[in-house]
Image 1 (cartoon, helix red, strand yellow):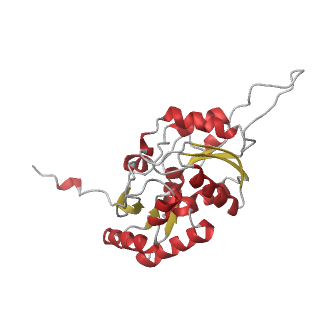
Image 2 (cartoon, rainbow, N blue to C red; image 1 turned 135 degrees about the horizontal axis):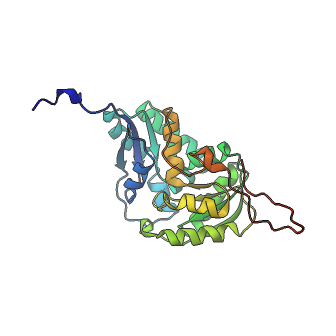
Length: 267
């Protein structure tokens, strides 16, 4: 059978992804990835430590990152992303910047981290106040709050789960409940769902429709920032960061007397 007309597979562009050893949501990252881009994942070495500030420091050591990036260069990615929120905010804004510099030196390609992508996304959407949801313990959550504050954004509310393992097993209903709790802390311009091991893809449009603010997640901002550096776009229908048409909501139910109409949302 003659199949020469097929011409071989379509050319693929590549994103190199460095993830912690316990990362379990490879499929979620792929959902944000356009068809002409491939993800090339590698993981940091296993260490017998539960999710904590100590683990965040261990999986983000420059030597570990350098070794991981060097394993990816063989497949020639156009950008390298470090897909771990706590590992990239544990050293503060300065620490995150140095991580990117170390990865770029190792691979001679642009580099992004989840926490750096978060601040970039907040700037993109002109967010001054943010509510946070984390699966972490209180100490790791406080470190995220401090990092966001260093980035010039005020945290108006926060809800955390106190987990140290198996974060990828958290059901969407728990994420939604924590989100509702976080925004009760005060007016927020956006909500951030932290941790690349927390499932979020399908819940983002639901929460945006309910809360009427942009909802960002760790994996979402990571892929958005990485693909942006390649000059292409992440796939995320009805997600405000990725879909401009999702940035305007219908008017809220009027809550003022005498028939006056009240608008909610942002443009």
